[in-house]
Image 1: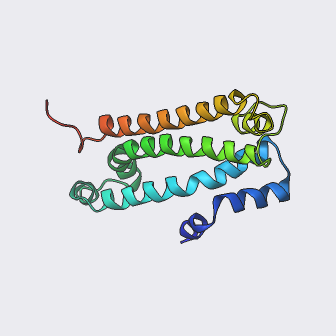
Image 2: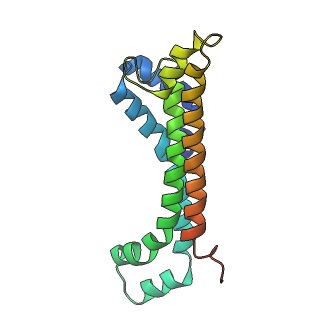
Length: 167
């Protein structure tokens, strides 16, 4: 239930409160991103484990006297590895967006450290005379996030045995 409560909190509000309490900087930003990222990962992996735990081959392993450790690493982990990899790639794209948003509003990485959100903020003042200062970092964010999402989809298609098709 703690994960559900934590998951219901608005990301930006939590990030801004943590930034107000602990200050701005890379360490605080990494802490905030870790606070945000773990909930979706835990929810998906837990749901997958609950499904796999109820399958017949896990019950058969338990009846045959397999230890919890063996069941976890021989039967459950291979089943959730694909899901964990896909969720990891999708979370990474979300974290890149989160870092960019926080840096854009001034709660993330601070100048002179290069970050796409900082570059977009600094280019905002020159939007009418040098639009490339906003368009280049914004396009980079877009391309990386879309590429990571496509990578996650591709990995899901390649790694999930239920989605593999017979050629």
